[in-house]
Length: 86
View (cartoon, rainbow, N blue to C red):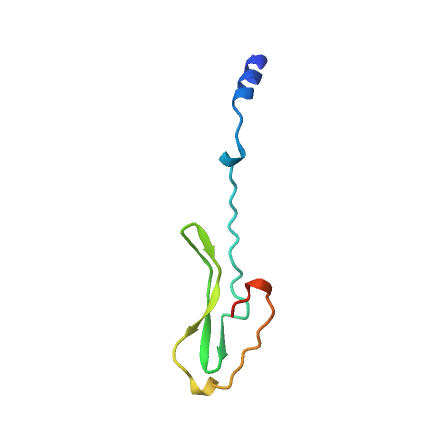
């Protein structure tokens, strides 16, 4: 029986293409807080998400209309390496 199993095992072997492991890590909740003001506009964190099997990284999007009381606000950007896009 052992010889039969070994013989069958020689014919049946998985290829690397058939085995796949996927780990979804995603983005951290936000880089510089959930919101910040820059030149009178509020920027709000939009978390990362999956689209067509690919990960779209989180980003800050401008939200709402110009607010005069925040017109002189300047956001101190922190260094985040290559992923820093704001």
